[in-house]
Length: 296
Image 1 (cartoon, rainbow, N blue to C red):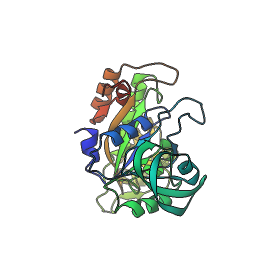
Image 2: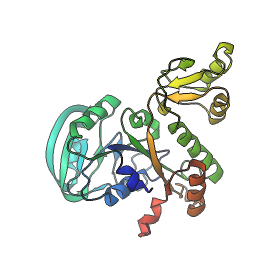
Image 3: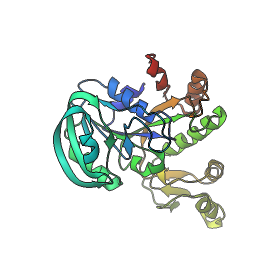
Image 4: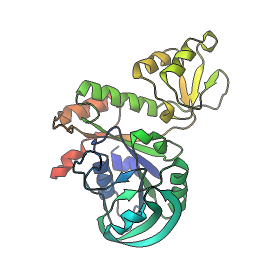
């Protein structure tokens, strides 16, 4: 199953970049370009996406292109800067750092900077407000704010990874596979027996404490979802050898996209990288950067 087929099976999907410059915006543009015309799409972001130049490091970035009929949310400031024709639908009291949140519908294709709600509750509130107007809601996310990509927010997820995450292919595959493993943790069966429930951050210290507790031996660890895990991979895998881990909510990971080029110009072999990531995760992996030269 390819990314588009998987996407059409969910009502909402978060796009998460494991690092800056892993191709998350390219992924968003690809999905918007290839979704069927009949699919009503709404788009927002938990950060700031679509600016032509990165505000932190100054590198050029791909702009976001929206087609006619797409709903989008952005701030008042960025709505005024849009390079498309749109119909204003709502100016909400949902706060952002750059003014109120504006929701609009594209009338003539063009480019826009997307900037959405900054908290989980505000994001969910906006999504509830547009769910009757959209078949699919896309949320442009970020690993640094993974909680806004949690199963409590979106039904599906696509990860963007690449050489910016690590320019060493072995390390890149290993680190990406670890995140994929966490996202795929089994869903809790509802049985409270023999469960150690943790609601906050799951750190190395928390895991070591459980490992050293003789009374906890063999018990299941129950956590809200994968976004609560902040443990080192080696500590985590050692913990799982003694304790099963289950989650209250689980995202459906639809696939991976990769950018084989690092910010310093180093380029990994795309075919090898895609094959190794697919073997390690069992998921479809696509190098969308090839599409920048028309090879999709």
